[in-house]
Amino acid sequence: MKTYGVDSKIGLIVATIMGSTETTLYTIAVYTSVVKIKKTRFVLWAALIGDVVGMLASVVIWQILS
Image (cartoon, rainbow, N blue to C red; front, side, top):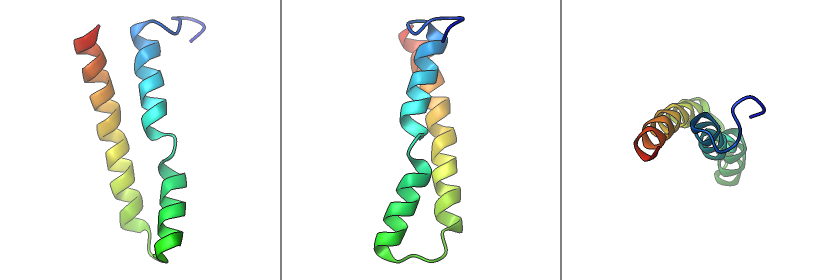
């Protein structure tokens, strides 16, 4: 952020990625403990795949909007 600034394309992409992926492990921990799920391996994979899709979508969307 110091190099490119917060309003640059890179700054916007990074902010969007951080906003969409920061709660992945927290969400898994809370939701699986509430439902009493013991095996979270597949939940973790699904969440990580969702994070990658979110990152790619962030880049594509900001490329279109900028």
